[in-house]
Image (tube, rainbow, N blue to C red; front, side, top):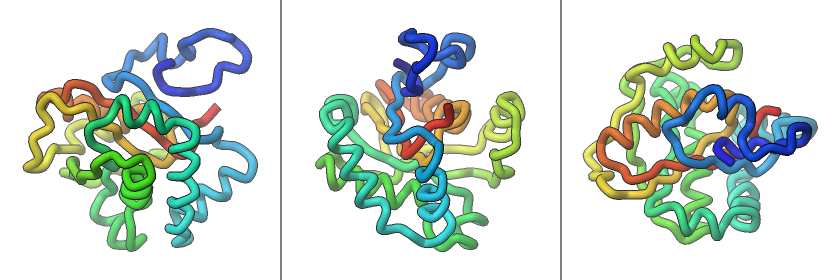
Length: 187
């Protein structure tokens, strides 16, 4: 019930990772599991310019989790991409997705966070290395987040390190609750 990972085998309410590694965010939801055709779809969305996929993802987010989104978010905001990647890729897929979900679910969108430093790609890093890589990487801009319930949007959830670091910064600035939604989650 924390990260949103499907509990196929254990049948429990909390996945083994979430029970061993508590999170700063309250809850997360995923649209799909990161397997099969979704892997390729997410890859095309991130790296091949298929920004239009965001509309389909947002539709599914509203169908699957719309009530939860509206009940748990005053603001929808993306996990920000570092400037080097943004310049190279030309767009921030989490930002495109956050805007689409906000529009589809009729929740205000606001770009609240920025990356204060570039980080190395996380694909091959361990949980501890991911956490170290993200320390002090995010900051809240000039928007007042006090007492706001914030929904963070990202593309893939693996260990929760990125979501945690963003949530930690937002909570330190007075956000009342931070949740997350992502296209896919690793099994």
